[in-house]
Length: 255
Image 1 (cartoon, rainbow, N blue to C red):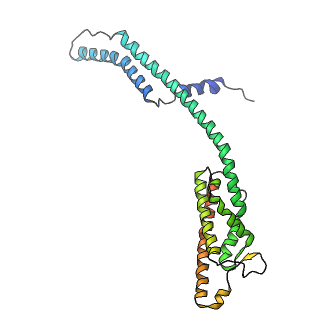
Image 2 (image 1 turned 45 degrees about the vertical axis):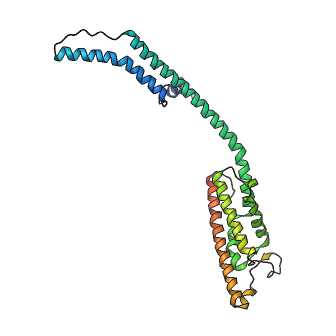
């Protein structure tokens, strides 16, 4: 195990953190600039003026160096600015640490809550099953157990199932709205039902409507198109929901 370098481990981080960090606050800058001005300007002015008068005009005017109190005031201002900077930096670091702790506590509370709701939705909408039944529903109908899962998903638009993650909650609401629209196009419209099924496992289209011709057949194909459009909208939102929750860090298993 390599020995710790005291300079790299302790001294250098302290220097970078407390002395080389940028002076980001206005108070520190003001104190330092004004203090430096009080210290440097009198001496520079004294030397420059005396050299110019003596060299170019051959005038030797006695100019006294400014009083010591000016230097003392400048040094005090610079020390005060540096002290303020250290205090300010320390308080900012403490504030950041509190924010990190609060964020961690918030995540520990909110993430499991959101994860549970998302898992509840996806358990009712397995990826392969969802695509299979939604795509074939307008032509060949839909299994009743899958249809019940779709109907149960409608509750996830209500307040008890709101997500803390706002982006995920927005996509969840949009997805559930599309599910509700699909269910209306499938069942409320009267297009899918149990009357054509003898197994008790399916909701099927009213195939007998086509045999009647005229308005009955026309209504059949109109409702079929409506359900097909609603299904495509649902699948689009479903894919976007999956993509979003993955990007937000939720664990959703193999999809």
